[in-house]
Image (cartoon, rainbow, N blue to C red; front, side):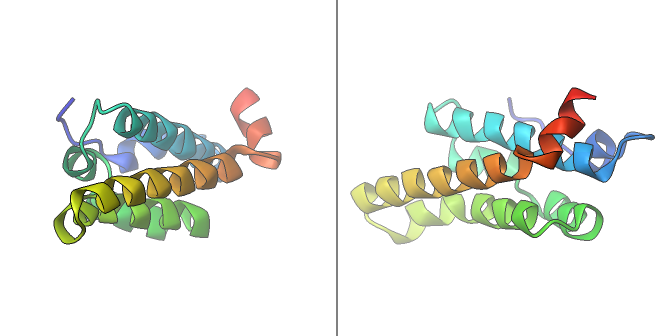
Length: 119
């Protein structure tokens, strides 16, 4: 998978509530995080596919959800770990960042937003 995902058309489907868009955003990110954790995607590929400037701007302006913005920020920075840290430390930090991102995604879909997925 090397095609760029554009969140705007994916999450701007007519008639969808903001809660549902945020929940879909979180589920999509969980899939990307799982692909990163399993080595299916590299950090650089993930930034090209999902964590690019267009999507970061869309999340900030249209989802207006602090946690979603945080997820995007972590995703953007993943490749930088491998540029500035020794390999072993970069791998540890990479795993920590994925755990943080996973936790943030789960935070978005729990509670009232989980109901938005079922409807």
